[in-house]
Image (cartoon, rainbow, N blue to C red; front, side):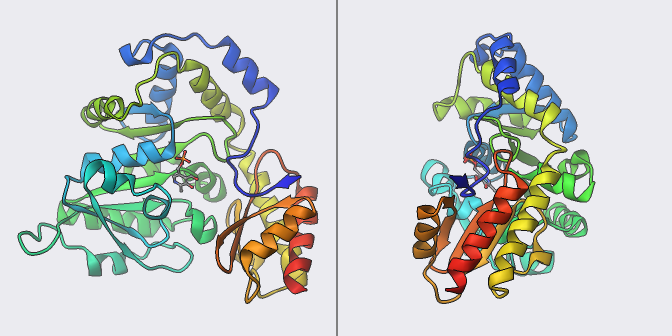
Length: 341
Ligand SMILES: Cc1ncc(COP(=O)(O)O)c(C=O)c1O
């Protein structure tokens, strides 16, 4: 099977497993796990923030990060295809009573002028007050879209101007960094809270880190425990993340090249499905036209290629460390032929 459903499907490498085995550990609820502490310190430093909190998932980091900025009954504004809006199971509303309002975009690309049109800071008692804006970089359902740095700067300024918070869902910020050369710290410093994931392109089995001020992270630590997310010898997992930081960041460029190869192979059979020139990182979104996406995905699976049907006419393929460029070319040819049939 060539599994392109997501970059979350990777197996930890033998070297990563060795690093996990060798990790010194302690009870992280007492903040005594040296490997977790090292990961939190390093990630905070990389992103230009004071402190970090290691959590089980990107969703948990997003929930905590947004909650630090938004009170119950207030809203966070985000893109209509944002992971926090579509794929976090309503956790922000269910656990914290936050509402969300969305703006539309092309391929998830941020346009600060559009955001400015819909925010309503300090709007009570008649309207819900916007307390924060959340941005996703790279944008998953948009197709691995990189947010332009000048737009990120503009949105951060907009937030500052209105005294509202700014959260970055940076599950794949590593991909944006490798593709653009923009420093992680330059991205990180624009936002009040930032979440990054290790279980996507970086290939770790579990784990995400939320960064912010020391005060915010101390509060998030309490909220994490309240959600049942306090964990003990989590250093075995943090060790995988540290290994990934040291060995799997720069190689993301290979995933980006493989995604381009996949898209070219699809477009070779059906040019309307995807324009390979729009592929910026490791995610390829295909327009299936009138062909039902679930049927195409099922036919591809029967022939050994797994992709995700994310909408009635939308397929997503994501490249990662467990697929080669040749795998991706072959998979792209197969999916392209199925789409053109
Ligand atoms: C952009 C984005 N943010 C957040 C997440 C959530 O990560 P997790 O699955 O670890 O909760 C994902 C997961 O794919 C994602 O793509």
